[in-house]
Image (cartoon, rainbow, N blue to C red):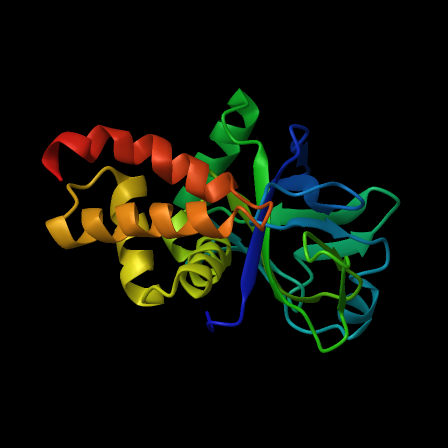
Length: 235
């Protein structure tokens, strides 16, 4: 998947699996309109109608498990995936295949262990609007690439959310963005930080502390500060 593709996840809690004929029909929502996202670090909302153009284009869209393109569940071209907008959001209906991973997924959904969907997309030029303070983003047009049923937590190191956070933080603190992504990935996954990574994160927190005397966005730095307390004896 290309680097410009963004991903968003929504916990819908009402994924439905019905037995129809010889197969299984899945329904759920991959996106919900006018609902605040988690901090990215900005807050994002999807406006009604944002998917209208991409759906009318009838491009090939596939449904995966966890964004894995080797685990296909359905596709629009085959008619096994049906996407539409309603008042709530982007509605997904799919006929699940008789594959091992699809049967395993069906069991997890029936048990209630799986309750999240996600979608991959990019924003065409002019497809978003920002608040004056840059803290809120409104998506008015979305070019949809794929939808996925998500069985676990987002893989933060692979999503654009973490890349955005790291890039923004690196710019604000004059830090190497790639090194910061590596350090954040190690921190989030529970790996042992190298001395250089620990020193880099401590320095980022200190420089951002100075910057935030004039800026309001401190969410990611607060998390880092709390986690770095655990490393203070080793630095």
